[in-house]
Length: 213
Image 1 (tube, one colour):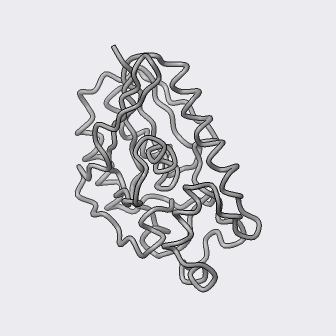
Image 2 (cartoon, rainbow, N blue to C red):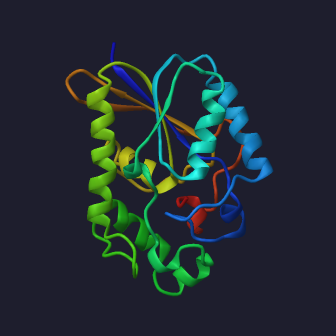
């Protein structure tokens, strides 16, 4: 039996709603964000997870906790390499401050290609991609088969998914579900991409909230 990775973006947060940059900083889920996560959790209630991983940030841990309430025998493991891309000195500032410096339609493809030099105090994208892909490599090596839950962030999930299916960036809705099958020979296949089971809505691709957080 191959390994299936069930990838979930965290629920909508206060900063997502307010248009503030959210990478390594954190903000709580909004009431509607929590409601959306609970819809996703119910959707995944019949899955037989053998393990669960999340970024250690509060928004992902909260999201994972709601999902694992249906799977009480599965402990949650956190990995800092599953954190979001760091926006450095611009963390928790309005998105428009970033767009005065860079074009979002150029920045995010460059981040995912590993060619973006980084923002002041933030991450250089090649190092970011290395840590994210290393985290997924460790998960795949630890679990050769079964269904593994991974709760992470918009850019971070895309950083993994685009290694399998390169192409234009398609934003992931909050609380959306993607699934990847990893075969015994190491090949990977995206089975579903960004399914918005909670009806949270795919963000406007012109805004950072489409991918950050």
